[in-house]
Length: 136
Image (cartoon, rainbow, N blue to C red; front, side, top):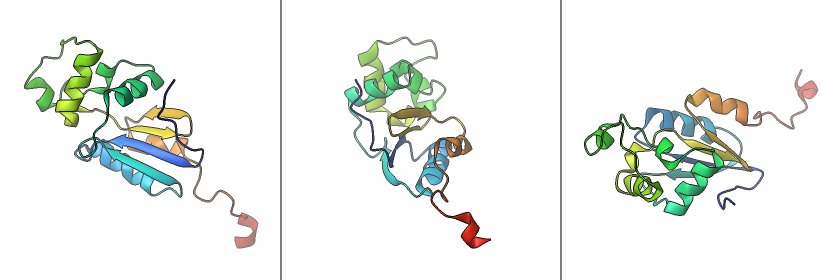
């Protein structure tokens, strides 16, 4: 069972501040009216257990969280590299910049974001709770 869930009104994002998709997704999430816990994988130590929980919640392997085309990855491995769980965790620990797509957690729902604007469909509208008739 994942220990990474968030409160109902909180959003958590795991992202790389060097990735354009990560920066843009962070911008979308940061603009929402929710409490935000942003984890830049380049600046924060993400544990092996956290990587495992993220992969499990997304129903993928830890290796699927890695950009195998990233220059830091290809400098040490080739695209067909097949490591065990601990091997992939080691790659992310030593070269977190190979983390491929941001992961956004809204309540108990986990999303791997490949297109930054896709995050909008997972967020409540900013105007929720406003009585629009008062402003017409």
